[in-house]
Length: 95
Image 1: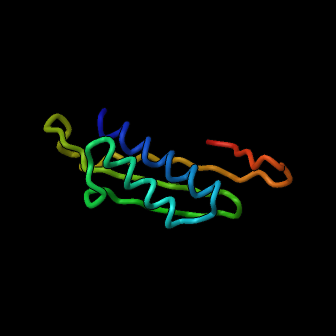
Image 2: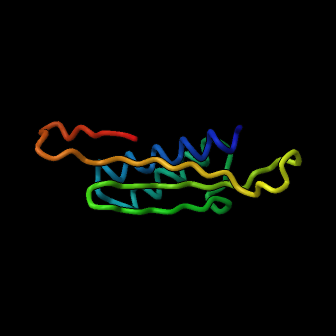
Image 3: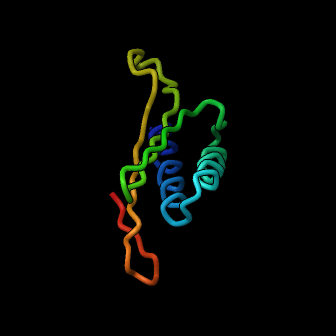
């Protein structure tokens, strides 16, 4: 559960930063900070960034540290956001 939560939080922070700033480097830094806040090193995480038109997608994966499910080596969480156009406040939609 801890890995799933940490990966989800990091993915949400990363995609939020990427969608609001358009800066992938800032998104990577935000993901690293979110992982560190949850006690994970960014060196153990795998991240994937995909842009499909105006949709930004971030997936964060962490090694799954459990002996209960040895066939599940990683836990992944994906979050996406699209920057809405024509709205002065720059509000976003999340999935």
